[in-house]
Image 1 (cartoon, rainbow, N blue to C red):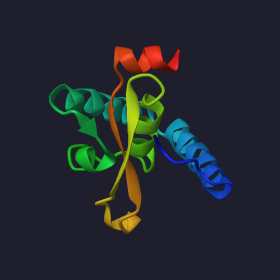
Image 2 (image 1 turned 60 degrees about the vertical axis):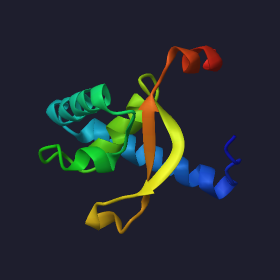
Image 3 (image 1 turned 30 degrees about the horizontal axis):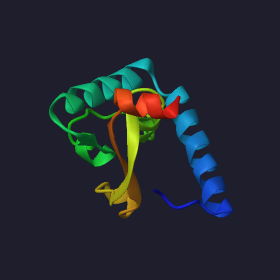
Length: 112
């Protein structure tokens, strides 16, 4: 069971989600599709995925698209593991990033 977020954490999460959604909307269809395709290919051979796993595998894509697509795919294909790892991107200075796994039929049943 995960802990309940504080109000400040909830607000920060909402701001993060809106910013990522805006960056993804502003990115080209090509950027979004190449990242989504990379996620699907990665998940064929791995149990989990994070931005760290894909960053080196991708060509240059617009900023924010990788985490935004991962977050967007968490609405139907992926589910958060509630695990976070330090980012390996130098620009993030080790900020924590989410780890996701494939959503199962049991996850869907539990959500219903």
